[in-house]
Each structure stands twice: as C-alpha cells, then as structure tokens.
Amino acid sequence: MDHFVRRDGRLFAEGVPLTRIAELHGTPTYVYSEATIRTHFDRVREAFSTIETHISYSVKACPNLAICRLLQSLGAGFDVVSGGELARALEASGRGEEIVFAGVGKTDDEIRFGLRAGVFFFNVESRDELIAVSRIATETGSTARVALRLNPDVDPGTHRYITTGKRENKFGIDLVAARALAREATSLGGISIEGVHVHLGSQITDPAPYGEALDRLREPIADLRQFGHRIQWLNVGGGFGIFYRGGDAIPAESFAKVIVPRVRDLGCRLILEPGRFIVGNAGVLVTRVVRMKPSSEAGRFFVVCDAAMNDLIRPSLYGAWHAVWPVECAAASDVDLRPDEGILADVVGPICESGDFLAKDRRLPAVASGDLLAVRSVGAYGFSMSSNYNSRPRAAEVLVSGDRVRLVRRRETLDDLLGPERGLE
Ligand SMILES: *Cc1c(COP(=O)(O)O)cnc(C)c1O
Figure 1 (spheres, rainbow, N blue to C red):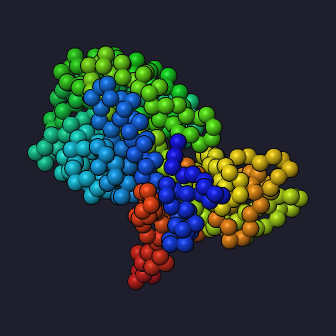
Figure 2 (figure 1 turned 135 degrees about the vertical axis):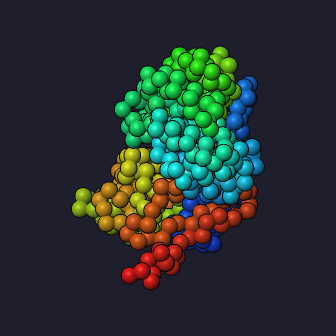
C-alpha cells in the first residue's frame, strides 16, 4: 500500500506530481511519502498493541535524518548497527535510551560510543563481544544492558543474502553455546543481561518461522533465568516483508498473531526492529531516460537512464524485482501490457557493468529520451545502499507531505566527490 497514485496520466507522490519534483530537484531523485510511512508505522503499532512493544526503526533501511525524525515523532526508537547509525539516531532523537545497538563486529570505539550514549540495549552476538562489553563498561564505570542475540537455526524462506538466523550465518550465538555463556556471564562485571534477541532475515512473507524461532528460545531463556539473569525483554528483530508485486506480503497482524502469545508466555516485553515494512513502499526513484538504444534483437530496447546500480543496487545484488513505469502515461494504471503492445525493454544505467540494470525483460509503453520513469517500492535499502561507483554523485532525497515538497538530502556535487582526496595526491 502506498500514496503514489496516477491521476490524469501523471504519477503523483501524495499531492505532488513527480514531474514537478524532477523540475525542482533534478534526477535521479528518491521521493518519499510521509503518509505512507505513517500508515505502515501505525499498522505495526496497532497489530502489536495488545502487548507492551518498543518499535525500534531499523535505521539501515533508510537512514535519512528527516525520516528518522519523522519516525521518532510517531513514537519509534531506533535499531542501529554501526557507530555512524548511532550518531544519526542520536542526531535525530538525542535520546540514547531509545536505541538498540546490534551488529556482529562492534569495535571497542563503537562499544564506548554506545555506553556514552546510554543505549537501551547492546544486542551482543558472541562470547568475545560479551567479554569486550564487560571489560569496557567496567573500565568506564558503567553498566551495559545486554540482550544476547541467539541464532535459532530457522530458515525464513527468503533470499540467501538476507537470511540471518540459520546456523551457517555469521549472526548470533548458537543455542548450545548460549547455555555455557549464561553460566560464564554470572562472573562478568559491567553487564546486566535482561533480554534475548533474534533477527531471522529480511523480506519474510510467512509468519511461521517467527513461531518456530520463539519456540526454540524457551530453553535458552529458562537457562539464562536459572543462572540469575532477569530476562524481561524479547527482541524479535525485523524482517516483515512488503509488496513488490501482487500478493507477496501479509498484514502485520499475521506476524502479531504468531509472535504476541509466545512473548507473553515467556513473560517478556517485546522489542521489534522493522525497517523495510515501514519505509519500503514509501519511496520511488525518479529517473530520466537518457538514451533509447535498440538491442540487436528485433523489437527490444535498452532504456538507458540517469539512475544506475550505484543508486539502486537491489536488482543487481539480489535479483530484486521493482515495478518501473513512465511517470507520464495515458494508461490509467501501471498494468502489464499485452505481448503486442509497447516495447520490450531492459531498463539500465550508464555504469560499465552488464550487471547494471534496474529492470529486465519489461514490456513498457513506448518511451523516448527525456521521459521520466518511476522505480517503485525503493524506500528500503535503496538510497541507503547507494555508492559513488563510476564517480557518480549520489542522488537527492525528497520528502513529500501532502502538497509540501521538502529536499531532505541535497544531490552530491563533484566537490563532495573529490574533496576527501584533494591535497593528498
Ligand atoms: C536489518 C536489520 C533489521 C531490519 O530488517 P527489515 O527486514 O528491514 O525489517 C532489524 N534488525 C537487525 C538486527 C537488522 O540487522
């Protein structure tokens, strides 16, 4: 569900035509819809309203400060996975006690930063890390509230690059090791183990793996409690899937139905770390067609755009499918054309890699150089995974609220690109 709608042949972000945003801010530009973010945040909040729940927005999905501020104003805390994200969350909210700090390789400096900020939880992923947190907290005379991230060895049925809760993944502590650690931790100073954390992966479209994972936590939680650790919080991570194309997502209630009774049964309060579910459908990437290039195959075209894999890497990295359609188009809705209509196209960028594409084998209405295209559902892991590859300045980001257009990240300039190297050559 989103607030990008087509009226009289033009695609709008809420009350604003995307053509106007392209005129104001150029292309490629990420355009976010505030109403869509609000709607999805509310859906999670309502679905989990029957139990005390902290919603910690996963900053890495879309880290823009304006988006973080918006979510904080709606009542969200933050889930961060690096010192940089911690700095962002602090700048957006100023409140360390609403931040959970995850990540398999926190450096000593990052742990110090988290302690200084007074984060709500360190989600600790290994024995080694627990010892480091204990040492640094003791040195600095503080106490770290810790949730042990356990690896339940559950298959969430998603892409293997975004599966994180299986035994062979680098994440979390396996359930056997957790028992030994529960005992060992009783002699470690500077820490208070009050929670257990799991995060199964991303773009999960079946609630069953959550149930399976939580069932597997019963024993480790009992063990931890037996050794005197007062486990009061269960952090179930993120991973709720969204709609990319018809029928590939389920409502938040379906996840709640599986998660809430189990968390209650374990006598815990709940922390959630949704990222994609909140912002995924809330962003489009507006790009301009630079060249139309016929392929050697008759009737096929390369639609060469000014956005590329450096702006949106999901198609190249995960084989992700995003709807792509002209911003201005007579058709009432963005529906698949009949095989005899329009053109057959690979929508590509200018980067020097054959893996540089935004969409492949799409039947599109006839488009021409200069036309605008919108790539849909790129609010999550879109801009946040962008890079400067091929020395391309990164795109602008715009937040739309009703009729209001706000530039929330200016387009990078050539000075931004070259500045860090100048004077060092
Ligand atoms: C990435 C991540 C999330 C968010 O995942 P989504 O699929 O975007 O909801 C939550 N928790 C942790 C620990 C993560 O690494």
